[in-house]
Length: 113
Length: 115
Image 1 (cartoon, chains in turn cyan, yellow):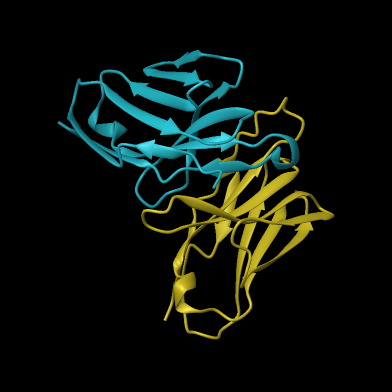
Image 2 (cartoon, one colour):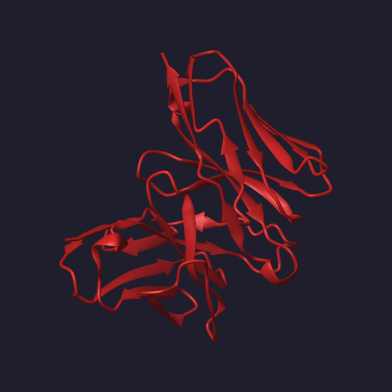
């Protein structure tokens, strides 16, 4: 399977704490992206990191990529109740699969007030 | 107005019926995708199209067909619906030639129930 796999499947924290989600993959990638989904709604793109990048920031989001370990992590700092959602990593295909994304099963994040 | 729209938003149908889900976009993107989402399984690609004359099967195309009527429209059909096609269906678009970023923009989804 070319899917990314997120870990943990579920994460429950208090407001103000940091949330870290991990994603592993098996085959080489063009890029790795993180998406957010509020309950039953469409996915929203959060951040993209290219295969030649190691770290990227966007507001309270920090993404790292370790291509030697085929893994990525998404850190949300100072979490808020509004961050409660499912978070998916998506691996960008390369070569014959360029233009496709392979989604993991997601991490359900719950942030308690 | 939403950039990617899907109709209907909810549909309940019976086994054996033909169903069409429609997707329209105003983003001007060449690439369009259909996914299904089942609880605990993430998103799985059904079909995708990189331009009007290009249609490709995804991971789980059996039981589905698609039509790319125009750059802005991509329809998904279930010729004879069965209960295990009950799922949340998403359409997405992306822009070609973006240096390989492939960021996708999703519609709000169609919740389909097959009885």
